[in-house]
Image (cartoon, rainbow, N blue to C red; front, side, top):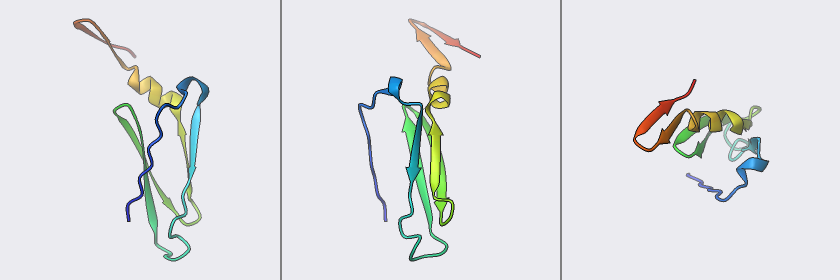
Length: 81
């Protein structure tokens, strides 16, 4: 089974973390693993959620810093530390 949810237009300036809770099918199958992917711009972070450990938290500040790692100014590509 594949479930897909996309959120767009979120006010990034008002969000610092995103928390997800996913326990789909964990009550039916003891070894159920739910894979969750967060994608911000081209950066992807994945989590495997299982019964008893079914929450994930994403720090958006870290993702935004990765997005800003390369700043494009005209013809020059500047890499930041």
